[in-house]
Image 1 (cartoon, rainbow, N blue to C red):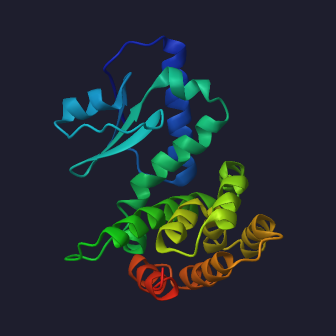
Image 2: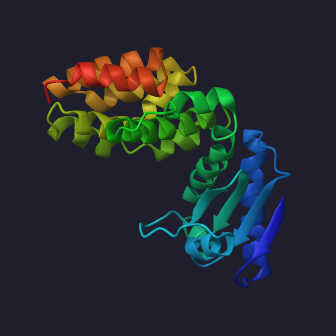
Length: 237
């Protein structure tokens, strides 16, 4: 693992960042030989150094960047360390991306089949990627609590309660459905308990259809399967 400083930071901050990322790498069993960590004050500064396209949207204080097969982790130390305990799940999710993008079995879960150019499938793929990342973390009994703590029950419940039964809403719910990743990781009881708590008292057409869709997706976890079933379940929307 190599560390490149694009900005200078105090040694104590650098050590905390190193400890955090090394912890996440070891816990997830990710090979670290080819990972380069950039210390910066702006992720686009790293992209500029790598000759990559800059982005305009807001990003987490730690960001995985895939540079033609090279695994880059860009870190904004002051912002990351300010998050305290929440920094751990962010670090875990970004480091998990290294595994998710390089393991053929994991890649097959969320990657769009070659030759398909469809905006809906692209968005399903992004949602499936999020579920795959949390699945990788939740497989570890030592790490699953971080996934549970990161689950925003109220946000998912609000989508399920207010949305119409549309494809857009189903994709939005899938992107937030942390309990689904926990179920996929083999902890069905816990995942189902979190899901049941989320939908408690909710009884509408969208919740019923999405519940059917998530059951199918859990049992056939693959972006193409999810996409096809999504179109079938919400074809009238």
